[in-house]
Amino acid sequence: ELKVEQNPLFLSMQEGKNYTIYCNYSTTSDRLYWYRQDPGKSLESLFVLLSNGAVKQEGRLMASLDTKARLSTLHITAAVHDLSATYFCAVVIQGGKLIFGQGTELSVKP
Amino acid sequence: EPEVTQTPSHQVTQMGQEVILRCVPISNHLYFYWYRQILGQKVEFLVSFYNNEISEKSEIFDDQFSVERPDGSNFTLKIRSTKLEDSAMYFCASSSDRAYEQFFGPGTRLTVL
Image (cartoon, rainbow over all chains, first blue to last red; front, side, top):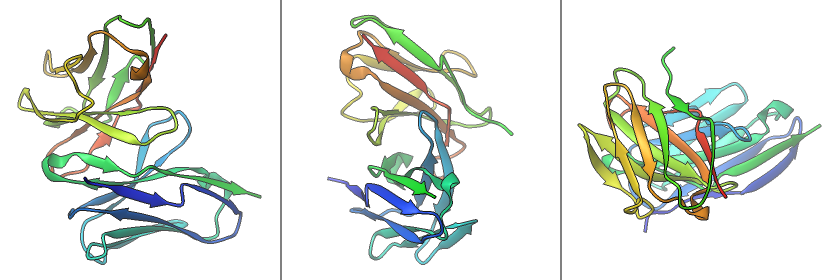
């Protein structure tokens, strides 16, 4: 059975701190996405990672992909309150469908 | 910038009633998807649609569900006889190619009473 697992599921951090969210998946895939979701809202695409060793950065967020380990990370640098949201990773499998992780609910406190 | 739109934003219905959720994908996209998210849970794939037929469907997508592209712009999800457990946020997505990024709509929140 295909699994996409994130950890932690809940993350409470202080402003200014760094932290990493992990996404493990159980099957081969050539693409992995990171999405942000605010409460009651849709999915906002953050990063598309296409190849082994891919690293992308946008502001305080940096995502990486290790296809051999089937692991992606989303690193948060010097967190600010505006980053509070739920973050999902999603893996593309055959036919193009997305399989999502459970989500990591991030709360950044002053 | 082109975007996927969905209507209604919120639908409340009684158990056993039929509902139709509507989506307008991005105009030059050819691949269409429905996903659902039960409150507080992860996003789950329901169905993919290409060339006027279903490409793939999940176990969730049973005989109560159907999809249709009635004209050149709309893509609909019908639930024939809603159950309490159908209460969820339903997202439509589209892409120009199944290898390319899917763009998500704002979602329809379905509440079954």
